Amino acid sequence: MKITGASVLAGLQRPVDVRGKKAGTGDLSRSSDVFEASERAKEYGVARKGIAQVSDVREAVVANLQTRIAKGEYKINPYDIASKLVDARI
Image 1 (cartoon, helix red, strand yellow):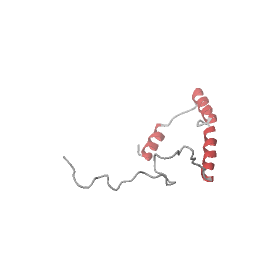
Image 2 (cartoon, helix red, strand yellow; image 1 turned 120 degrees about the vertical axis):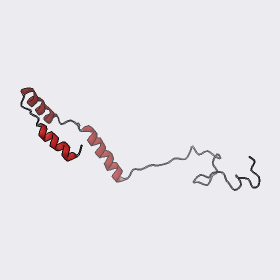
Image 3 (cartoon, helix red, strand yellow; image 1 turned 45 degrees about the horizontal axis):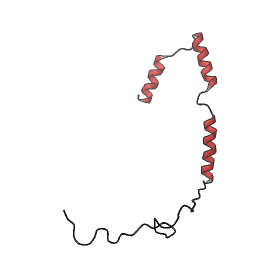
Image 4 (cartoon, one colour; image 1 turned 90 degrees about the horizontal axis):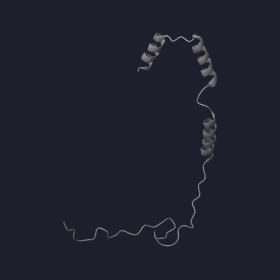
């Protein structure tokens, strides 16, 4: 198929960067972008670092359960488990 008439590319221009230079001309490597995080983003960063330092495992709870299991004192009630599963709709 052959397209005739006005060129499809007519009216298109070279891209222009934000400083008005045509893309592909001049040295843009000397430009520098600056990023500065907001105060809220900085607070999130501090919070994430703090959370990363906290263990996901509560050592005292685990130790208590291990002791109770070893002594045979930890009993599981199947009816309580079934009830919670029904309540959670699992």
